[in-house]
Length: 229
Ligand SMILES: Cc1cc2nc3c(=O)[nH]c(=O)nc-3n(C[C@H](O)[C@H](O)[C@H](O)COP(=O)(O)O)c2cc1C
Image 1 (cartoon, rainbow, N blue to C red):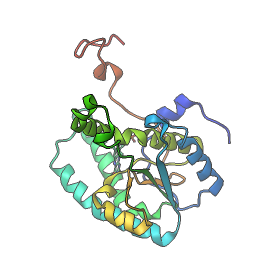
Image 2: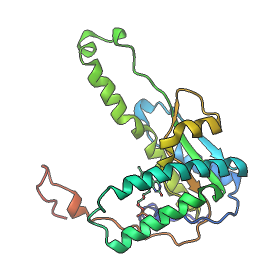
Image 3: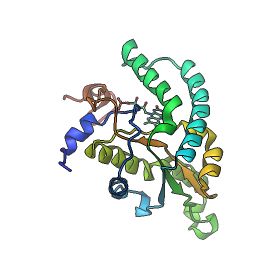
């Protein structure tokens, strides 16, 4: 593999939803996952697990679940105002690319499902009194940061795919029908899925990734003091 630079990967790894059916070599999938697990996790718990789905029938069924879940997503999107920073054209392009995936998710040669095992906090009575008294807040905190132990790995997957010339993106619609996904894949209780990532050689080109400028989203020292850059 001729490596591309990290910055080039970040600036060009856009969401690619149109993928060729050509198979992805198993050793490349392993290398992508080996990059994924370099990611940080809370307390270095590494309580992640990944299901790699290549079986055509299982992919087809996952695709159907994604299709069903996307109908709900579509209705939610219709009730939401278009984000101001996107032009009509950019928004329509994103929506039509998204709609393509509703119909074709199951045709990607690899569907990757990043998961996390449950990591319950210690029981209240095992903690010092000062923490027992704020136990509910601790639970809220734990809930709030849960995804932060898997989404860095998801981003590593996106970048590693880019390095291998593979298209992918993070999708989450399936979580609306997660019970069906877990039943289909035999995922046990105490494990949750966090993304469904189609992976394959892209029909379209990589990048450039378009974003609002740093100056619009950054403050210096204090909220609402403009960042000079
Ligand atoms: C939390 C999250 C959930 C997403 N879920 C979906 C999804 O279910 N389906 C989909 O097509 N794209 C999904 N996306 C992809 C976004 O639409 C995409 O990252 C965004 O439009 C930017 O695309 P770009 O990098 O090509 O500019 C999701 C992205 C994130 C961060």
